[in-house]
Length: 487
View 1: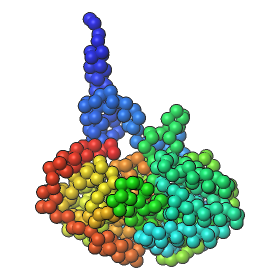
View 2 (view 1 turned 135 degrees about the vertical axis):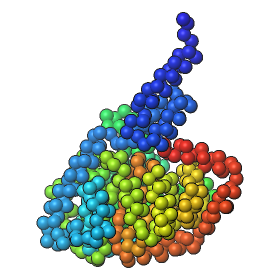
View 3 (view 1 turned 180 degrees about the horizontal axis):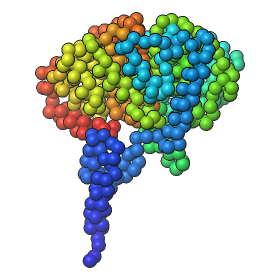
View 4 (view 1 turned 45 degrees about the vertical axis):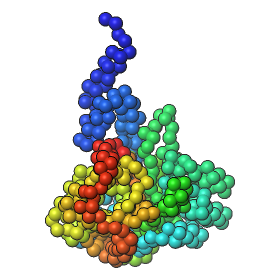
């Protein structure tokens, strides 16, 4: 029998399909497995190559071992902190029964307890948030830790670089982490300026395909964290880059992003610092604690009355931490859920939690953008609107040319969540994210004002209007939905 290339390729394609049926469904959700199998059956060889490059959603075993080691270390530090007179009363204080399941979930997933005695300030102003970060760095006396997905030497990032240089010149210890690929277009000047000032800066999750600790290239560190002297912290959705992200199309069309940043003081800053320390250890193998970094030996004062907790998440953990928290929050709601997020591609459990909440009488509101900056995510998101609207979910789309990039959740009148996490499979499974949970009526009241302003600037989406959208839009929505498990 003579074998030609067509016969060989046909046999190889058949073999790839059979192997895929054995390999891909193992330990994967049905939707994700179906998407991979569909790709491989349509284009066996190309699909197999993509699966080998992108099929593993976890960080390397080496990095997961590091994360587990740091989780244990965080638990030990929490236990040690309970022996400190000033901190003992605020670590895991007595809780209302309503909060116990959420607090216990986060503590079980990350080792981070709830922390009382905090102050939380929400900052929706893009330039104002950066100005406040600069002011606090300029007042730093001991150390500054900065970690961002994107950090540019532009009108927004340059003042932060200048403040770090000034801090370093007066003897403050500064450390900086930036994502490798997320910052690819901007990192050169940032690395050069910080390096020239003697400030150690490392790129997170560097793309090194031939390294022994290689991870799939699209696993990114999407966290945004600033810690000053262990007493002040910032987190949220905003990157240190101009609000057009320097995209020509954005500048031409007048498109810009709006964000939400939380400034916190009090004991919970230790948890934000713990997330930074974990990422620093992963990139440098240098474990920062009060012995190796004596500048971190500071007293964390009680500054307010807000109960807070920090949830890091990402492919270094065994579970989908942020997804588990969000689902639990939606099931906790009794009266009201408001979600503000640019990318909402609801995983099955999220979709069920939101639709069932609406159907049991909870007022569920989703605030998103009228326009999108990611074609597939934008259309995959749109494919779920009809189902959500039919269930009674209210959808508001922020008017163009603004892209609403803020990420927050409010539950009833007493639980608020602010962070870096989108509500799609990338943020649940592939990105390292950071989330601040606040169990406090005043924080929710402050967030409600911001939500109300977003809604005022939005169009209410009606079911009849959405069903009448152009056929080509429906086609792209449905096509993007098929691939949403892989985006």
